[in-house]
Image 1 (cartoon, rainbow, N blue to C red):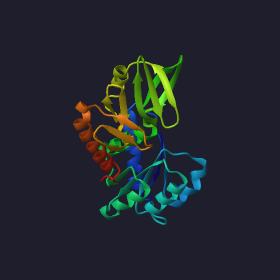
Image 2 (cartoon, rainbow, N blue to C red):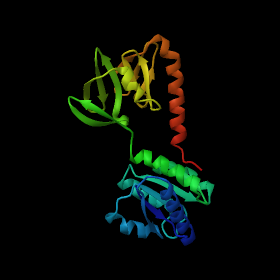
Image 3 (cartoon, one colour):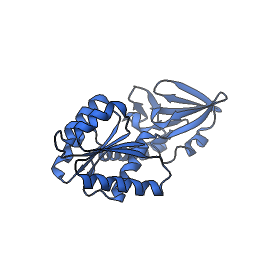
Image 4 (spheres, rainbow, N blue to C red):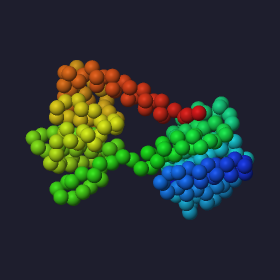
Length: 240
């Protein structure tokens, strides 16, 4: 992971670097960083750098952090952005740029660890290694809409393709524990991120696909959907 720290307070910038060094000493992860004293300095260097995470002070001399974040968002919709600030009143500006976090100063090792954990998950999405006709292929979980069982075979329906392999739904499900996937029927596992609606006997995905829901699973599925989208709503808000 490559991090940019944009901070005009030399002491705060040095503190962030010191905390990153502490983090690296206790975690088996490759992390690098560069520091910039202003938005202008960062933008000047940007064409020659590719960052996974931007750690931005809100109140920079010259162009402020929010304006800088909006400029970056116009170029890159995926890069993780986190704000550092002494001022709570700017927290809602994070919504406009899909901020990963809004951290109140001072930055601490606990706060930094939480931020990097979230950023790592965003940079390195979870995936399955599946044997597809003799070839091992990495399939990212975020790309899987649902999985359908038929006899001794599974069809994994991604956003762009249907992939068939010899396996059981019970076995595959053990690899999906703790994820957004839910068994809704003896022959179907769905990714809750793609569910559009839940009816009496089936659910509908956002592309219009209807999937049957077992009667015994309807009540629990309704609760899981509600909890899932409550969690998403909370995670999408900037954090203090």
